[in-house]
Length: 304
Length: 127
Image (tube, rainbow over all chains, first blue to last red; front, top):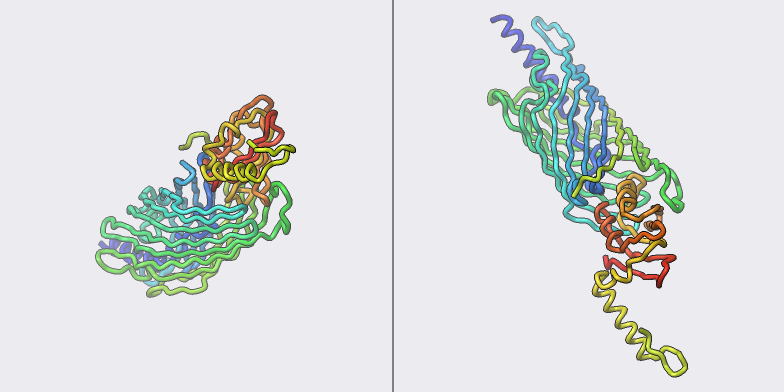
């Protein structure tokens, strides 16, 4: 009985500390971290890997890797499959008698399957404007009971189904491009626990730094400066009909970065810097984050 | 097609008739021109709209190079012009080029055939 009470206290403490960190651990996707409404040729397969580091107060750290496959089924329709692996999701947990220790959970996270359809497209020589909605489903493929000390919110997997729908738009010219995304993620409940639904809005601008002049042909490489903003507003998680302390809130990050791109692959980095943050109770606050991106293009003759 | 006067010069009426026929051909779209657009060998220049970065050219070049008979494709990002060189004796149509650009998620523009063994043909997609 005492052991059960201790475990329950640890779980609640872990949930309280890690709850707000979820905003950082699962940030809204921006133009750099997601293709937005940019063209994807039919048969084009883009493989991306995104190692991410998130550091927050209360000793909350997350190191994770997102692996994404994008497949152009037709000129307008694309499918996106995203799986997340948590290398470490850790937090300072307060145990019985006020003893503090660090708990860590690692393992496979949930899988997200999305479909994107381009509904509006205006192309010019060296320019394009496109609007594309996404619909997606989040599948509970992750491990949701790796370490009970860290609480439900700190597990790699959510254990719940969810839906994610978004509207994106992209404008691109030879020297710069910009985009915006508005989306909503809704989560279902599992065993009395429900992750808070999230509304998110992103905007981003990329400017060509090099080469400074475009000659004939296709440049072998290009270097862009990137500046993005991500805003998320998450409802508090609910457990047994009550708000989980420290979960939910708002976060606005400003993300400067660099993008190096070639015909076959692209490499980029962006920092996540908190500009505005409202957390509930004693929730963890984002200190900083960083995301490294690598994407590679493949081609398959199988498409519509 | 061109009406001529007694001294071999185009008459005003003939020029007007040619203008009307050209306008009708353009208004009716490319569907009236595939027969002219079919060439063997040679080289085609095609405007491709919507391409803005080297990464975006990957799918475009894959689709253009996938057309049977195409030997080589060069693309200029600045001008948006694809230079499609066909193998000697190979046949490619403007419609094949347009379909390849559509499949690559871009918009085809004007197509012009160069170095054709017969009369050169110019086609416009009307987009």
